[in-house]
Length: 412
Image (cartoon, rainbow, N blue to C red):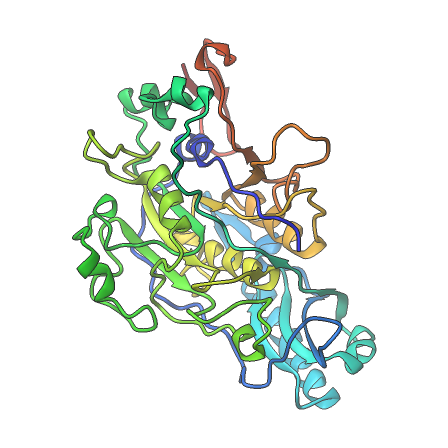
């Protein structure tokens, strides 16, 4: 298993400050996964009888056939019907191959495909099915790690103490001019978000956190700050677990963070600090969506990551794109990234549809070819961790950003 890389999240402010879109109603939790998951077995080749596959079907995904009507993208109804019929036909054929085949996720927008668990001895038959254009075996991403405190502070870090990440990238200057992420919808595709934390408007006490059952809906979510989200996997999920039952994703509507990393990322992006012990994120007025793709422990699979990108395109699942997220952040990956075709295609289609996709470049230094996947995708803004002398950074008098549908924005 390749080592996880983490995302230097402050640069996500770039997407927040230049993407123009209005805040819409909080998403209902309409994204669902299909299937009876009880038969899922290990995906490890040396012991497995089953495996997790992502199937790409032949009909184009709906984001690629969407039409612009009065300046807004709308899903083409005829394309949606054709895609639905194709998926139903393929599912029927899969069932005919083996009743053990189970559908985990159905993708309609970012790709047209299915995530399934299937017997390994049926792989050849699945590959030859009509309307199945491509088959990819799921790989895993190890969970994001929270770095512990240390008694020894490196000199470069000591020199930067007192300078927050917003100052490091100049976001404080943008904030002072009124660019605070207002009206932006940002998805954090990670371990979830602790919406009981004070930075997100919660009580901010250990008791408030412990009172939440992550497997059940809670009155504290959604909130004014964490306005939407979904748990795509459940507490016990681990795509690399030796306990086969833990490879079973269980979708629920409570994306409470059980690992800590997603809350760290969300706070850097859009948290509210007290100005003394904690500080505002780079876009403190942005609305957050918690897209939980990791369980309490262990790894996640790229089938789950694609499901998270699918959710970002249409959080309430009604095929109306008005609630599409403006930015989605993926602080996950592995060094020496080798992009897989299907999640790269999903990122591309989501990006072309207007969502800024930001992915981890890594924390591993200036080694050749070290940049992590999925951050190596052409359509992603790839961000690496960095500790530098502030005085040595490149500075520009102004940067001009343009989009197909909005006037130019100049940021000093």
